Length: 409
Image (cartoon, rainbow, N blue to C red):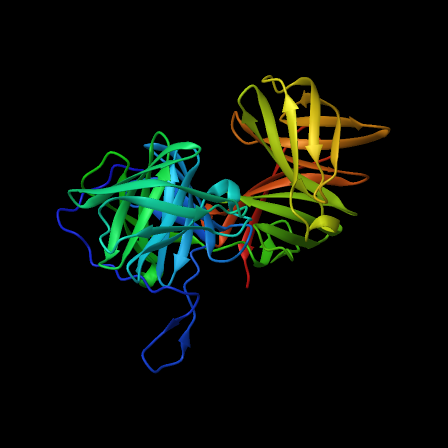
């Protein structure tokens, strides 16, 4: 996390559990929606996007002078409780329940599954005790957990059948504690969303004894809405049926009508567009190869497809293994060739051939569109708020072109 000012005294944050906040004897109050791109007071941004299951879970991605971090958050009342790290880090919310403690938890890789559950006996939060739990896939586990206070924070260590796990927590009040867990550089942060577009959070890392403060100001909300295209026409963006950071796009432009499907990742909307159906994939460098996730408009209510390419070099020929959104496996080969600013791809899977075009996103990510006929790929940076900068190219292009959008409603 960014090294922002450390606070000397604890904040008093009260967590309201459940999906709707309700005043005493009053009507239900709509909960805040943290989706969007936020500017960090100390520099950089954090993008907040709904997770796959859509039950109050959110993915977060920080891009700051201190580095890039990722996280998974649980929205409870007006607080967003986040486990963050340089790699995968999970989050748990534990609360006093009768003579013990009960918790729910998730990790980024399990954000489309049910929440895990855990129970600690004993009314005191601190100390050693037996632990029982159920992971998001429904498998039971048991072991031991030790919690100890160090300064402002609580340090937690689990020993279960699959090894040891470390966590760090911030007390929300006498009855609740927010815990981030993981390996390496990880921690927990709790954002108070009651300030609207100005948010304050308190955070700590795995080795800390004091918490720091992080202040955010919202730059932009999600991409849904109608946008005016600078060159003429409009772009309408709406959430796809599954609602896990997929969006359906429709252009009404002087050159004709186009449709597309987009994936929202780290404050950028990556879109495969075309006159007919076109799919979109995001691929990232993964160890000695590449891994990707993809979807098409016809499969917008299914899980994302997955694909892996062997070989660390991007250009050239790769062996491919993948899983379709419906769960069937496939394998084949893909050839990646650079032409000007863009990359061209050709897959052979069994007797079928597919083509694609890609815009590099730095050295380790690609935005890819694939399809037939007239199609292409576009990348929109949402950090500009209601004025968005984008890049696009068509299937046979060798250069990207700019596209500027202004939110009209």
